[in-house]
Length: 418
Image (cartoon, rainbow, N blue to C red; front, side):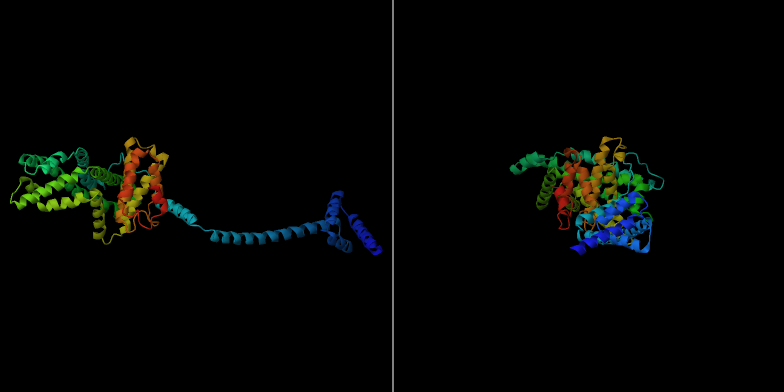
């Protein structure tokens, strides 16, 4: 007991001796606190033996603590960086990858320029191709007007079928069908001219040394014509799909021709639509979307015949057009430049048209993860519009694309189109 009291007394004496060298009351007070925590006792006793001043000991103590803290920080920083790397790797998710992929796609593959669908005029270099295509497009409005007013001969055909022995009804049905078949022939022949026009545009918009984006930006009059062909194609196919009279009329015509051949009868109408032409027309109208099928075949044929031209040059032209349309639709600065309210609908139809064409021509289609078209973005742009104006376009994506139901198509894209 006595020895313990003695040790405490000696300790207090040493501390008092050191504190007597303190340079200020405040410093001594801080040392008292530190001593009560047992933090500076070794420093104090060392100061007594070395004869150091209070300020010198304080400076050494603080400097040592700073160095120690700096060392700890460096070690903690290395550990934190390693931990963050591990955390990033172990917590990697497909969503993070998709985000980087989308950002990269936006930066690299989405050109931000305004494609003037309203006022683009041909330059001197574009004039030759533009004139050729313009001559075809001048007929497009008339073709659509005729198709829109196509009523068919359903009533006459039903009466003729129900009364096979009534020659008057047979003749009435035949006379009603023949002008309609002549009209269908004009539609088919127009599709052949449209195919040649598309080929000319593809040659102009994919020719070296320019990339597809440069072509579209430099040759906006040709890009506008390309868009007009796609707009016509969607409009024609939409009207055809909603008019079953076309197939019914042509089927009745072919049955009547076959029956008359068996009876060795030659009809005047057969001279206008011979058997070979009728076979080609039959294949054309058997398609759900005949004009789109024509463009798809024309594009595929263009790629196969131009061996030196990579298929990516053609598909990149389509994907770039889709991206330009999407960017213009979702960017207020671009939308406000449309002077006509119909231009926005035109832009949406063109976007959907190039997506469908891309999906038919590209080996893996528009819905694959490797596709250069941001399908989610395009669908969301459509869904932001009034449903009555875009339902037909969404249906076109649902029912006229080729790869939507492939296993490689993400569930999110399928859900957006449900």
